[in-house]
Image (cartoon, rainbow, N blue to C red; front, side, top):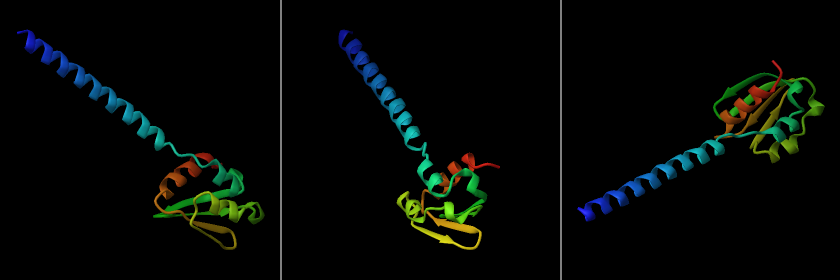
Length: 111
């Protein structure tokens, strides 16, 4: 009887440790997915310089108010693989993080 109680206690403690590890790992993974890109937004000329934002796979396109406010080199230093600038439109080739960048920009630009 004492052996059974001992094994039940050991099993309970192991189960508790596993539950704690799962909770901690989930909390860490949520923190990792909370991406912010303030440096990229600043390199694009700030929130007031961006309008008509759209996502297309690994690319983000938008219109800009002032081309001079866009720092292409700084944009590339912030994870953008390529930047295509036309008359009043910019397309950023970002890759896998494009949806995360899009969501961040969408939440931080003026409507």
